[in-house]
Length: 59
Image (cartoon, rainbow, N blue to C red):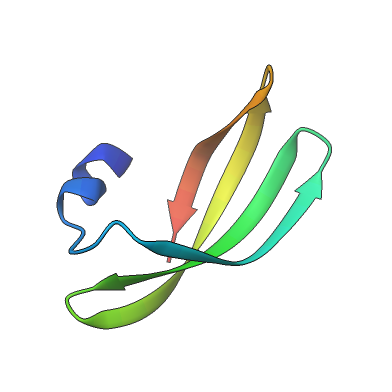
């Protein structure tokens, strides 16, 4: 799902607006531009080993 969404993005630039870490999980709010409009997306992250991965994205 996320892979398909990345193909539709006009620009791959994102700005992290906020991030809250809670143990092995985190919530990040990122600002991006799609079709000339700015939008905030909430990303749910999980820590796997030493890396953080996106587990869910919602607008």
